Length: 120
Image 1: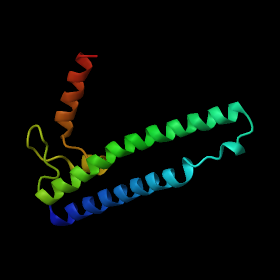
Image 2: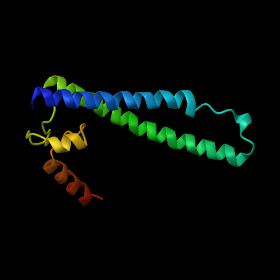
Image 3: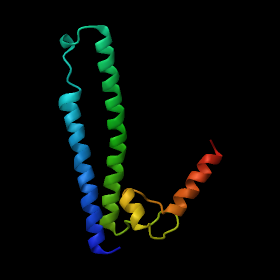
């Protein structure tokens, strides 16, 4: 992959990373701060707890994505970005643009999904 393309992906991944970190910071500072005295009844309290639970689940998923972003940045540094972990072929640019953290080419990912369906 050309250096210019790698830098484009690095910028994209770093932007996604900073966005995720900002969301996490905002969640801790704003979304999780609830004054129980402001909730007039049990229903409001339950709704708030449910909303917070959903927010925490989303942040958990984003934490997983953050790890994948960091791994992709390491692959860029190591010169391994855009190479399929299964077959060693290049991962298509369109696929990387759609999912820059991917480690499998479309053929290997399709095969992986086919095998997963067999076991479900």
